[in-house]
Amino acid sequence: MTTEIALAPTDDELVYRFSHGDDNAFVTLYERYVDRIYDFTARLLGDREAAADATQETFLKALTALRERPPQGGVRPWLFTIARNVAIDQLRRRRTTPLSALRTPEGDEWQPAQLSSGAGDDPEAAASQAELAALVWQAARGLNPADYALLDLSVRQGLSPEEIAQATGASRGSIHTRLSRLRDALEESLTTLILAKRGRADCPALASLLAGYTLPADLTPALRRAVARHANQCEVCQRNRRRYATAVELLPALVPIVPSPALRETLRERVTQAMRPATAPATPSSAPSRAGHWLTSTALGKVVIGTVALVALTALGVAGALWGTVDVSLQTANCPPLELRFGGAGDLVARATGLPTVLEPGQPVHWHLPLGTLRTTVTPAAADLAIDGVPVQIRIDVDLAQVLWDGQELLGQGTRHLPLARGSTHTLTLVCR
Image (cartoon, rainbow, N blue to C red):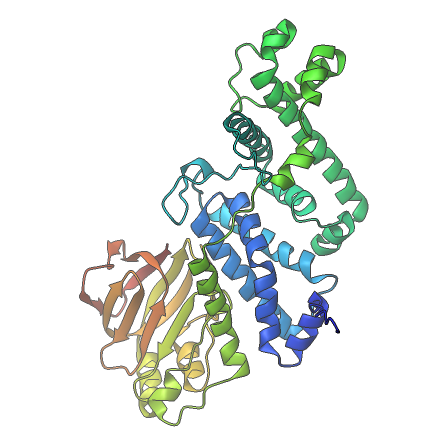
């Protein structure tokens, strides 16, 4: 009897296969890393929805990059570096929901601090584990996001200092030094929290040192260093501290935060859709069909689609635009960069109206629309814009929280007719959810 053992392809093999036309290879990479990328971004962002956006953006950025060239160095550190940069960018753009306020997909309270080693049927042991997990998570969250991301990559994701250095462009020595400092800071923070919670009653000197402090809110570097100095000289506190694992042992033991099966499948489908234009381009036979393929799914997962009603009249529309235009400032908020991909007659209209190739968040662009009337219909799922008398229609498929025209809300207002008069200027703002 012969036993066959199937070996899974390495990351590098999958990249090679994808570069040679095997789309399933990238899907395999997605399946291999989606849970870990989601856990990483969820802990960094403290927001499940933001983590879903960051995970999607990570894989779509990776997809776009792999079409250009394979990553330098390992695939795993490269993917996590993309995820880190995406998450940090999100944190710069918006506030996040505190982890304690989040809910699971089933509506239950989400506990991000749970140890993976169960306590069996012992309620007391389970309560002790839950308390210890909460303490290590409080200690970790005391770090700034960039520091926490680096520590998570090393301790929870298992990247070596060499891999982190190669992926981030930093020197190996600086990464070693920074990781050592972060581990010390995390250990000092956890020691302070554990002794404050479980050792204060045994040591009057410690109780005096912590008097007047509310933890973890008052867990400053100065306080944790003071407690660490005391613990190094106090046998009672040393004994109490030795009863528990170290922070570097506990942090990886936190239960991973994973997407729901439905979310995982949704993300997988969006990644699959993003591969279709590059690998299986449509070949529409009619002019309206060609116009419908001006723009395809963007590299960042948000879709902006433009259509021309009658390609034969596009030149007339462009010529009319050149006789007189209105300047419209177009900007986005809380959106990832929106990449617009044009083809055929779409390039002509884009150049004539000033449409950019990328809409960057917080960076307004000027869009020159022909004189006339702008007809808008905006729902939470999409915005339809058309110019009366000009065969150009633009549909923006983005999850919208607000759409403002000169400060006035268009979302949910039905069809609006907005004048584009000579000499006027306007501002169109898209706010994503």
